[in-house]
Image (tube, rainbow, N blue to C red; front, side, top):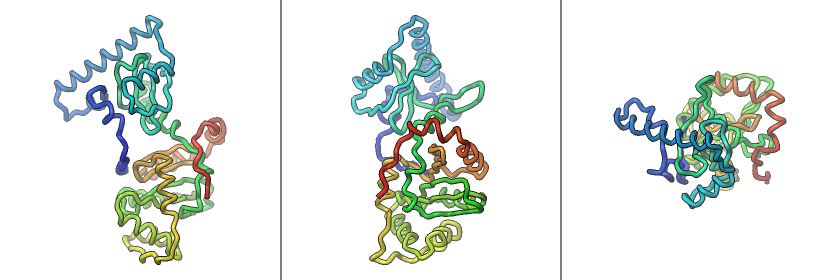
Length: 292
């Protein structure tokens, strides 16, 4: 996965001792007794939630949101949704998802897995909730890569000093019939900004980018009078909460983080190109800042 460079607090950091972390119980290298104690807490919490459901005592999402605000004043909650498992509520912070009960008496941080389908329910919901309107992206601020007929589109945020991005570029260039909009997102170091500007100011932007990412051939320094969209792209990335790189957005507006293997990119592009994935949910997707 790409490197996490977010500067804000995470759900794990915010709740510290108040949370129950399911993933800790699955860490095979952890102490056995610690795992047992964590699982006991999870079971007790879920049992309490199930008891509340069986008694017909259920709060509205707004009531859960108010309870969280009292206990965690610094928490910015964008959305609370009742789930269909264990009487728990899904809480979306804008970047993360965690779970709680109707009184916010406990917090569960981690992934929910559907045992029937083995699907990661949490990750699927996060992809949906953070989806954007793809066509609102300022493509004029990106380097354009076209292969074949260019019919399938993706937008990618990358840093020139990102090793995972370089691996991702190699797989990306092996895919046919697609257009990739590459946003230079220099967040790892000051040298990243220098390299991104140098690439953008090259006569052949795509050639300079691929020379560096695929062949380790550095670009020539950017002229002092060359204007770049670096500041706009950095602002866009912050608005879209791009905290790890590479980050790939597909035509249906959903994103996937990390250096994806070619097979995953291909499969997601096929799914994102289906008409039903572009129409029904379009109105609920987050708009991108107006192009300038």
